[in-house]
Image (tube, rainbow, N blue to C red; front, side, top):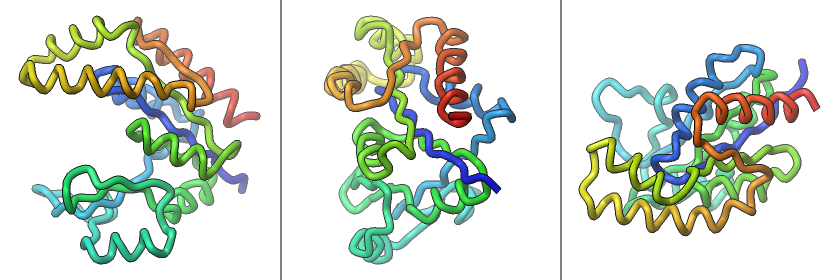
Length: 190
């Protein structure tokens, strides 16, 4: 069986990355499978270990960091870590599936540096910062302070877009999905 490939998709918050990935996951021809992240946070509701996340103790997570078992990881809040285990990538690609990593911008850069040409990194951009601000406002889920913080972070993250193999502007969703699908298809068939 042929080995699968690695696809990293990153974007500033509110850019539509999750929607684009959701559309791509419906395309069986791409043979995509999500990577399950590891975290030190406790399961919520009906979440199960190995399904939504791999739930690890803080000590176990840190031991795995020391043993170089992560492709990327970050301490998102004090004492709360999230990361991608190399074994998870190997499990999916070993089954001939293409692993999709939905990562923050810095995590995406880390994975690309680690895997080089074995990974395709795609950066999803908003048409403009003003458009991004309007999208975040129209959601109605965040305070103005939170939106301002997200926009400031997005400006920083956009400055890192050149670290990615390619960029897709999500102005018209259908076009962004089609362009991303084309890029992934070329990579997995190449």
